[in-house]
Image 1 (tube, rainbow, N blue to C red):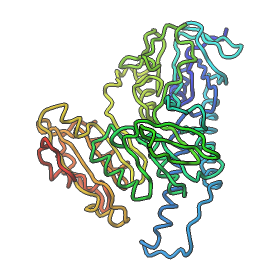
Image 2 (cartoon, rainbow, N blue to C red; image 1 turned 135 degrees about the horizontal axis):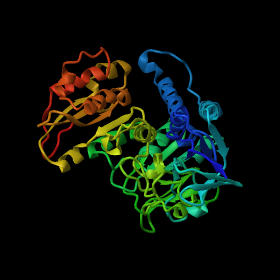
Image 3 (cartoon, one colour; image 1 turned 90 degrees about the vertical axis):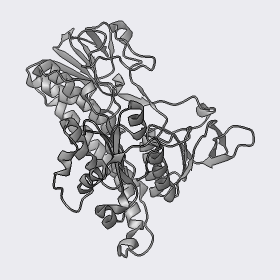
Length: 464
């Protein structure tokens, strides 16, 4: 049996930096990876999808060239094979870099294969038995297919398999109107596909305020995406060489014929084949590993980091999981998951950035709240770039004067929001930002202006 000071299962966002810290501390460690190095972000998530978003942005801007006084003459063509090759190159380089990184760490053994628990301290990978008093689970998650009628009878795409397409879909139907689905919907529309989005609920991105969802829908529809809401009876079937999609109940419901279907309705953790029951590790009803505020599982000496613990579904939260574990284990620094402020972005174009509370959440929390808003059409940077869609919104606790949330929809929103996020972590009054002198012309320079126009959040809310 091979004995180690620590075993890390998975090389996603949390695994390699944790391996580096443990290696630097002189630990003998093993890191086990059964597929591609780098996990979801590097291989089927952030990096390849944002590479495609960048290609889609260029295609969109090229078609708008005349608006900027640029004459490119002729139609704008999309070389699908070339843009997919670019995506593969960027993603592949990132995966290779992660592999070289972990293989180069002192005292580290890299084992390729599927790990499963034999006990709380023993793992088997192929014909190898590994033993450690400390095990860190970082196995990520995958797309979950819902029980749609006919889903087993037709070929459907997930966020992973759509990245392997060899030809541009003629008509892509996206089942699911949230973050993953909308990013793919917009990029494939810009590549030249007809795109239909089917959302079961009454609005897109259901965790956002209704007016935010409406603004995002308007942006997508302006680009020619067909958005259908309240599609409560989705059914799939073959019809010749196409896929027939029924989105509503009843025998007379209209049917959409398409070439491809992307199902983007949720994810599940990769925990069902680890033998967690043999280790005594508890999971919830959805399969997520139960952890405490320091990411310890129900078994002493076993931690769970990243998407598999249900405490965050983003690359940045996974990396923060590593920071929390390392701080508590090596630095004597009691960092906790509950210290984390909710922060994420939807990388449509323009992007939607969200931190802290939404308007609906602020109302449910109670207490006096101030709100400041400004349309992007009154932001110089947006006007100059010809990208005036969206708005800025900031929420402030009227008693403490601290920022408690922000929703920024518009050009550079995913970058500008970090100024507010840092203010929230600092725990100081919003007035500190009002005294800051920001660079002109930027989106961030308007944040103090928005704060200067704070008003009470009334029962009905206000539009930007």
